[in-house]
Amino acid sequence: MAAAKPIKLPKTMGACADLLYETREKRLAAQKIVDELAKQEAAVREHIINNLPKSDTGASGKRARVSVVTKQVPQVKDWDKFYAHVKKTGQFELMQRRLADTAIRERWDNGKQVPGVEAFGVVSVSLNKI
Image (tube, rainbow, N blue to C red; front, top):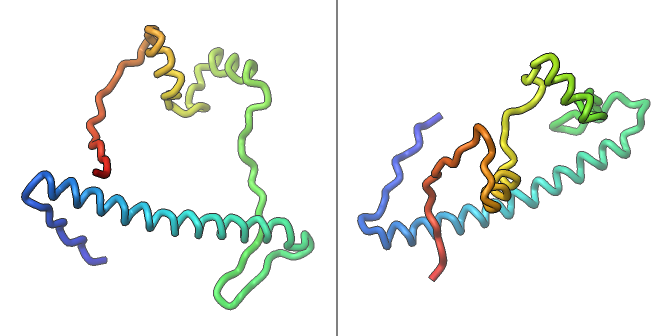
């Protein structure tokens, strides 16, 4: 695969702001197309799942073959029992390490701290059309 060519950046910050805006607009337009394709893809998947006879192992076209597969995924039935198990056994790897940003922010907004959690400044750019 060819290496990506370096991005040529304007000399002035004003020109950079315009380039950022134009680039974002192009990305958002492309994302709309991607979103529509994703909807179509999901609709076709759902159609196949609902309409492929259970007796068939799949279906083949000229370029692709599909089959409906079922896989087992974990789902908590009783959170209290699950949390008690994790606490008792120390098997915290059964859960993902991720904060609920909204819940943390709500507590901070109410002047409450959450033990072991601190704020981390993330630098970003605010972009507004003029």
